[in-house]
Length: 633
Ligand code: 28G
Image: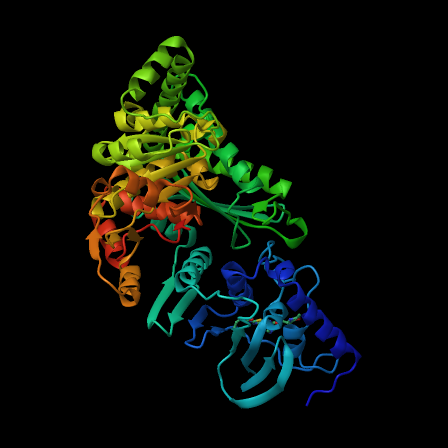
């Protein structure tokens, strides 16, 4: 039985503070917060590897909802601390003010984690730590938010070294949340890319699944993975340099697509909102290309825009920044602030790219050719916009839209909704049934262009998409501004069959590539038409899914007919309005991007022109949706 002295009481008060305001320590108590606990413990294991001890980390999702993380590092020291407590007890119960220091001098993360293993302990029903060190196996166990259950004691002998931590999150705190194998795998894969030579294994005991990640070539492997289903235009270019204690590593490669895909990391943690390092990288890259073009008399004498030299670019930027220089910005601390990171990344990128271009003339010419085309396309787009502003353009716009778009009569853009409807027949019903004041209908004929490999010129030449762009009226690509949108909601309404799903995917790809802020601002929706109607004679009830139909069948007495809707066209206009369009009775699916990098990867796998990866991906993800990265809520 533990004795409670003054310091013990202080410690318990500290842990209690975490339990009272978990959000302050781990951001939130939803699924995200729950995963923070994992990252916190895994980061400690990663630290040990970065310090040069161990090369293997394993994460096991246990059947009972607990999780076990182990490494083969030195093992947490097991000696007595000056306080009279064992070192492990101190490490797992004392809150670290600010963030923790590491031996390498680089704090693992600057964001919400880095709060220490004691926070995880505070939010766990129990935590069990097994340490292999000094020929011994030692164990300490905590319960109910960090109270010592069994103090550190030897439980065996072993020549192994390392640490194993098992914890059961307090699901009273993380109500309804559960660990996601996919989320954990994706993050572990990312860590394995960033730390060459590290093996990370993830096991799901419940589902009997396991993944193992190991990459010998770090960032190069990362780029290989990102571009695996794209066609590269050059070999992977990579460089690494240190200035003023800041280490910059970059790998990049151009592909024949039109998208730019830049991922950045600081001290092995992703910076999803970029920041000074990304700005520096972009400036350095643009300058290198513009200088090269000028010095070699290539191109048109006009300077490239940054976006021109990033067309088709995939890049991973990884910085190591000493603790003292770390600065993050924004609510989620997902953006690097450190000003030195900008100038240092810029100068390293500029020097290295300049050198590379001079040594690789053929590649240089190839990329500059692509950038020149981008510049011309930009120019063409600008001229087209100017045309729209002048009378002629208005005429053209009206002509493109006439006979297709049924406009809303109301003038409140934010309240207005644009329905993109599959097929003329459903389009007709939607036009008849709609609320004319707020709802506009644009029927889509045939298949939408696959935008994965389309340039903005291709898009402008495509009648179907052109109509859509004019209807929304907020521009496209870099010029797109959701504030100019004629509609507060854009709603994709297709049949609930394979063709409908395909059209949805094609439209999602278009919006993702060319009007991404629309998704980011939560303005894109998918309509959710019913699959069945139960006809009771006097009235009908509508049912959305097969499961719901089975449930309903069990409870209903009396006679009824089941009608299955094969498509939107089978509903009459009133039915279509009531079930799928009426704001009071419909259910809409909001499209959101939870992880841009993943969405990027998935869009290129699904929509790219390489057949094998697509087949593989579809086989692995049987239900053909863009879940997770395109979360539908
Ligand atoms: C299993 C999941 C997570 C860890 C270590 C190794 C050491 C350590 C961890 O020390 C205490 C305080 C300052 C030095 C350090 C072992 C030095 C020598 C370690 C982990 C000691 C922290 N030998 N491995 N902590 N410092 N793995 N994996 O947590 O003075 S945490």
